[in-house]
Image 1 (cartoon, rainbow, N blue to C red):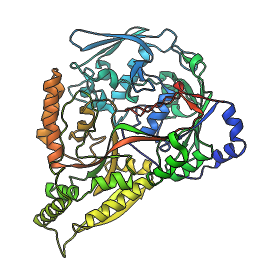
Image 2: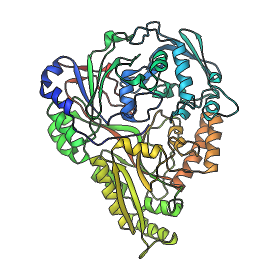
Image 3: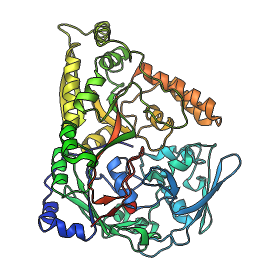
Length: 533
């Protein structure tokens, strides 16, 4: 899932709400939480960012969900069984599951939604995440005459959903926690089309319903009285604010205007810890901070150039000095703590001295035709936050040492990631990927040549693709891990994307917020939180 932040804009209505009496609002059970940025869409089948995922965890409920500990627990499905070969899953749905308009949530809702997700007409960039389902890839790619009705999902009865897989998939249950598996209300989609996501048309099966969406200001959700567990949802209203101006968000938190932020300005970590103590929370996160190189464009199609740029990066300096120790240096694309894996592939120069790295980088650039009088000039595109800006400046300085001249293109997060997703031109671009499920495939699939939704650098390696296909067909976990390790090694060698850091979750958490726990998944469902008086 894309880590995306957005440039802050004037929060006019938000300010009005807060000035009129923040203390009164808090007393009435209103949870004020920062978010990475405004969503590009709230159509679950077209979303892709972390900020959108935070909202959808409150608005919708899948078959299974993440708890506040990041564990997979029952959602709409109260129980499930699997066949002996692991290819058939049966989910028993709660009889009390309801949409916010009172309609029952049925197995047919999930059949409709999963078919919609895989239908090529939907244009879902995340469709390939569901390729483990029988015929999903054929349907989405329009091959072999496959139709959406051929998808391996069926309603046995209103409360029983059966999903058939192409092969046993060890991470399938956790995969269903992702927004690709969320149901949408069929009647609303058919009546309103793309406008079914507007507040006046929204029908929810989650703990909250959408009430207001004011771009650049706030998104308001109210508790859904029809939700099957509404009696245990303590917070009546949650208001999300786009807070990519991290310094401003920290000030608002200290003023009592926010209960929770999703990030912290790295240059203020020390002072904030001194002022706020354990209200500053930093913990491991299943994600990697990357630089994507456009491998379809010269000279970035040259592995020597890519390696030189990677060699010149002082990851330890960036992680420790720019990010104040809240990130870890990354020498591989797959972060620590990943499931279903063994030793991760890492860059072979991890333990080399900085001087040796710099010398090799200069030699590589010279062999690729660059040097005095012929510098490598590149354009670095990134989405604007303080942390990203400081990182970009540090990278440019480090590349300057090997004769690289860097210029910047900066935009808000929504524009930045849409540009990459839609195939826009670039040289080098910042990117962040947060694991959707704890399996190495969720990071390695980004480099598959047919992954048009996320392979923004247009990397194409038939050997790598063949290994990923081989791993998908392998049911023995140990053998599968070995195949993925071989694919991982290709990426470490060719570096179509340069890993820079491994993420941590970084939150400011009010002492008035109860129930909050950090987890590897970064899941913060409001339904499990409460506010102290």
